Amino acid sequence: MPRSKQENAVTPSSGNVFVDLGFSHAEALVLTLRADVMIQLQLRIKSRQMTQCEAAGLLGVSQSRVSDLMRGKSDKFSLDMLMLFAAKLGVPVRIELAA
Image (cartoon, rainbow, N blue to C red; front, side):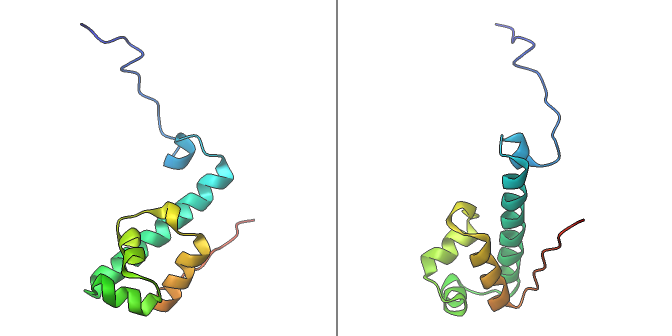
């Protein structure tokens, strides 16, 4: 059975996946920040070849929390918590407010 034109319709991206998913612009910005910081933390932990237990000790959390971080479960972390992790890992984080 042929597909309808609507099934094959392509909607161009806004440039922010969170906006495309229906989040408000403000929520999308925070979600993007959280995702970006999480990726940098994951990269830093991997580049140091740390085990999850070693990372947990450094970050002051349980190994299961590090597992959540490494699996990208961003809903489990506030931006504050991620920035604290970044500081403990020596990853400089700077939020710049544009005029």
